[in-house]
Length: 162
Image (tube, rainbow, N blue to C red; front, side, top):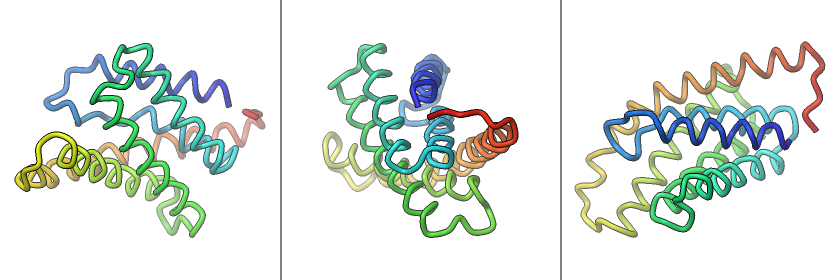
């Protein structure tokens, strides 16, 4: 589990250095580690990996307990909760790609709702949702495909992560 946390923190910090058009738009590659933890270790461990990634990543990045931290934590909790729920109820025909896609939508909705509740308080903030959901579609598909590929490789190599 420690390696997944460490890789998640690394990806979290790398994403922070990418040039992005908005503070909320990121590829979400750190969620790959949460998806891997969910499949290979279980839901509780996936939640631990996700929360530790946000805590440690924000401490390293200097955003701990700042607005970015709380938005990241809210999005992560929504995404991870969605991952766990969908994975437990049945992944359907999409496997981890579908789980990741729904988690990306949950993340975008949670962050937008938090921005509304904590900072903006104008309904117009929700006009950004179509843009965020378009980004979520692309990032959720990419993240899910990468996670699915890595899980397949790890299972076939018999690598233990616990």
